[in-house]
Length: 422
Image (cartoon, rainbow, N blue to C red; front, side, top):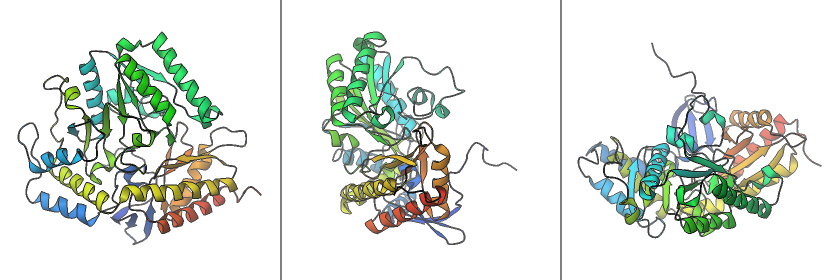
C-alpha cells in the first residue's frame, strides 16, 4: 500500500469535501473561510459555475490535443483573448503547465534572444522549484538547499524591503538601485546580462510590494544595457493586486510577462508573453511540452477571463484589498507582536516579531493555526516564515473580509494572551 510523501505537510488540518466561492467544506459539513485560494490559484472562487460549465463541455469534446501536433479552438481562442489584457506590445504567447515551467521558458528565451549568460534576481524573490527556477529563487533556503550545484550565471541584488532594513521606502529604494549598479560594475556587466527577473510584489518572500521608483530604475537600466525586464506575475497577475497586472501599479512596461496561478481558476496552466519579434528570437524547438496548453485548461481560462470581466473582479480586488489591508493594520495596532502589515490588492501579509524586533515564526504559526481552528484558512511566507498572508479569491465580498478580520483578531488575541497595546 502506497501513501503520499511524508514531506508533503498540510498548512491546515482541513480535509476538504467540496468548495464553493470563498468557502471550503469538510466531510463533517463544517464551513471554512478560505483565504488561501489554493495559493492564489482559484481566482474566481471554488467551482465558479461558468468555469465548471466550460470545463465540463470541453471534457466531452476534447481533453488533450498536444499543441505541437494539432491545433484546437480553446488554445487559439485563449491566445487571441489574452491580447485584450496583456501589456501593450506583448502579442505572442507560449503556454505551459506550472509557474516554474513558465519561468524556465522565460529564462531560456532571455538567454537565447540576447546571447548573454547572466540573470539578475532580487533577494526574497520566488520563481519556482525546478533547477533553473530554483536557481533564481532566494525567498528561503528550503527551496534550494540540498540541491547544489544549481544553475550558474545568477546574480542577486537587494529588493527595497524597507521594514527589513529599518529604513523608509525612499532610502531602501536608493540603496537597492545603488547596489544594482555596483553589481553591474563588479559581477555582471550589462553586456553580459540577459535579463532582470522581478516580482511586482514579493510572494513567498513576505508579501512586499515594489514601488514606482525602483521598477522605473530597473526599466532605465534594462534599456541602457539592452537587458530584458521580465515581470514574474505568477501570483500578482490576473487581477489579484487590484489591476490586471501588478506592474500596472507602477507604470512600468516589461519585455516579458510570466503568468500562472489565477489564469485558469485551478486548472494547471501557465504561460509567458512577449513581443512577436522577441519571441521569434528563441531557437526552433526550444518551446514545447506534452501537456502545455491543455484544451480543458484553456477552456477554463477563457471562462475565467469572462468571469473576471463580467463581474468586475479586478475592481473588486482593489476595493476589498484596501478593506483587508486597512483592517489588518487596525488589528496590528492593538498587538505589538505584529511588527508590519503590507500588501497590494488581495495580497496582505502580517509580519510577527519579538519585542526586540527579531522574526517570530512561532507566534505567527500559532496565530495561523488558531485561525484555522476558528474556520479561517491562511498561509505563511517570508524567509523566516513569520508572515501570515491573506490571499482570498477575487470574488470575496466586504462582509467576508470583515468576517475574516474578526476571526483574525480573535486568533491573534488568543495566542498572545490578549496582550494588546493600550
